[in-house]
Amino acid sequence: MLKVARGTQTAYDRTRNESQPSNVPAYLPQRIRMKTAQPVDRRDRVLLVGVTLKRRARGGPDGPAVASRDSLEELEELAQSAGANIVGSLLQVRDVLDPATLVGRGKLDEIRVEAQARSVPLVIVDHDLTPVQLRNMEKGTDCRVIDRTQLILDIFATHARTREGQLQVELAQLNYLLPRLTGRGQELSRLGGGIGTRGPGEQKLETDRRRIRERVGKIQAAIETVRRQRTTRRRARQAVPLGMIAFVGYTNAGKSTLFNALTHADVLTSPKMFATLDPTIRAVRLPSKRRVLLSDTVGFLRDLPPDLIAAFRATLEEVQEAALILHVSDISNPHHAEQDAEVLKVLRELGVEDRPRLHVLNKIDRLSEPDKKALTQSNGHGQNNNVFTSAMTGEGLDDLLARIDSAMPVDPIVKLRLRMPLADGRHLSLVQARGRVLHSEIVDGHFLLEAELPQSAARRLQEFVLE
Image (cartoon, rainbow, N blue to C red; front, side, top):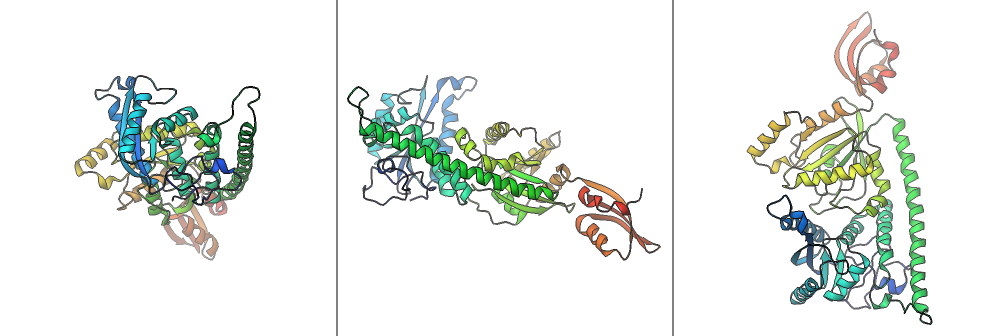
């Protein structure tokens, strides 16, 4: 079974024995632990269901089915990242979404027949379901049903390693669970709403809600503590003039592989979506000998749930504090333009769309030579913010570091002429370590140097500067 962030998902499954031990926390009541959001088990056979609207066909000759099939392919990648065994998929095109069942009663019957024929206990819907739609779909299909948001939360719970990441995932999961307590199966159904019918069922439901709200409050306080600690560490870093550079991009664009190639770190890399969740910061030295900090953050996704963005506020603050943003795209993906648009939408939500940014077109090793040549030529026509790289082969990494060096606004490089005593080894070593010597000569027992240094180092050498 996939790992779960502490206390947020349960081990219930209609296809399993109820006596099977569960790894859910004690603060959730037993009946919630038996019926709340499920992780996808590696043994689960899964049926995917997509739905789209006809009006999206306007302006496109192929209609909405093509875009929805692409969306289903992305959902398939997500499900495979969660360890699911996908046995089939269904797509429906509708005029409007059914507020009660999302897909309509007839489609529910079709899904039920397909699930029974394929012995599928789990249906994943490529849409966010309301509590009513979730309940009605489970009743109509006689299967366990989860939506796209719940699947993403399950993957996040699997990949959360640090205390901060686990807290953020748990907060997002509990916020997702809270409005879905009422009426989720017979164990959570309330008694009647009339006089004389209120009793332990209603009281128990309110007790469950109160316990979850209390837990949410504790998690929010813990995340705020983590946020203050991160702010303190950030201020300590800012005391030394080291610029922060944040990697952003669609999930599975190759950010972690590129991060490892530049910093020689050992961040987990995987073709699975959302393989990297917890932020990682490493230092790297640029060609000008300036040291900067690179931050690898969580990948973005189409229609990323707002609650999830809010929960990961502490992590995404690294993007908000970055002096330069590296937008990494998988240029070999035929849908990279749509993915880039989703990334820019999240950047606008974070308020950093105007931040200095380089567009890193990664995975060029997967392109044919004609395509690569065409991209290179287009880059020469005013698109100077593009950098072509291959994190796997190392192609373009030197160019990327040079472009970062020229675009980095923090601690800019200045050119100086210096006159220093030969015996002043301390300041001479500072020039050699922090800067680049362009010319040097010895005159009257002094070094005459022409060098390029970061502004922070140049301030320490003002007494030797020649006008």
